[in-house]
Image 1 (tube, each protein chain N blue to C red):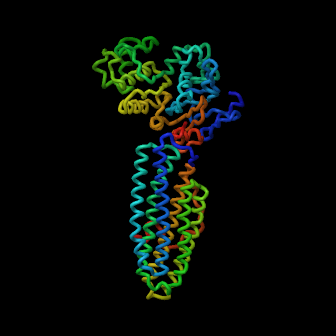
Image 2: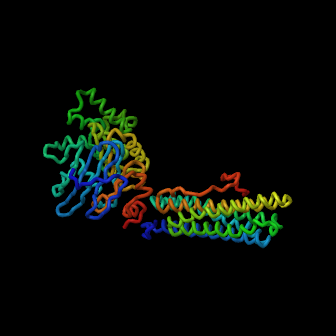
Image 3: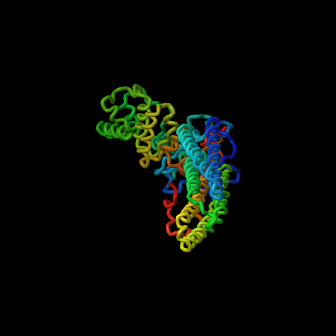
Length: 280
Length: 242
């Protein structure tokens, strides 16, 4: 890190002025992922402006902000999903366990196994429930044989809280499950390759409240085993599932801190206006 | 704390505004109850004292309405940040202010029992004490209306004056009791009245503490008080109300 890249403590606030530093670190533990001075451009348009943030293992981190604020764009930078968009350009530095994920020697397929992703709409493969889970371990060569693979499938479904509901019909199509079950299947699929980080992009926005509660409970149980980052439009959800919250606005990270502080006593006027429903 | 910008959902603003109006009203009624009870005491006006007792019902009803609407607003609007702090403060303030009304009512109830007040010298201090206690109530609620953390701190500091009055009255009443044993009954009532006023001051500081929290998100720094009230029993429960 350059000397001029001062990283703020969580108690300090980020201001929107040009001269101020624009990132905040978590205070405890070694961060799992670190981002420094990240800019993202779609063609000429800048979508992310100088974002610096740390993501830790011991806390679920929620990204909140109005539509178009860049939270999903930034999330997608964290496992190079933006590579699939030809006009997208990412500058700055994002590291996983100290390793630059944008380095030329980084194997993107490996990266996405280490940094898994769950999307807004459940997207199971049009295959059996079993194959949905087994696919990743197979292509990454994580299973030594059929028995090993069976075990990975079972333990992944167990961790995703789906095993009890599907254990008698593992050969049924994944797409035949309910929306909530499909989403938990997608989480099980991400878990199956033993990732370090799980990114969730509005994982509950297509689900009913009960299916949502199950996913939230799952996130709670997975905390600590994986570093989890969740993008959500639902502020109550951010408040319920996360320990750290980052508020994005117009491509900038406005405030990052303890979730309880953000929702009871935010430091920045913009954060306060957004979370109290005064925005726009 | 509120920077004046409105919520996107206008109904939320109207709930909050209605609550602020009701808090102002319950505060105004409590202040008035204190003033009337003291006037009744000074003039031995039994009708006015009865009016205070009757009107306490209005304060009780207001408290219920505030609590209902606060509860409903929290349930339906899921408030965050300063909105949440304000609603929690409103909920607690309504209870405290209702209690202030009860103390005024208790003073009024004692008016018929204190008929020889002119003979008891300590009575002369009560109007000044009640004036300050009443001001604390008014200022704490003004602080709430204006989100004024500074004024809230000021209320907290000024409560010391009420405590000092109480200590003086306590000593004077005890002396009077020793010198005039036949007045002990009435003197005891006067002491309870003074204690009620002292509790009103304490409750005003409770309101001020909630205002401070609502405005800043932080607990109010501990008051650096001088000497504590020197009553033999100074716990929160021995306040002589019924």
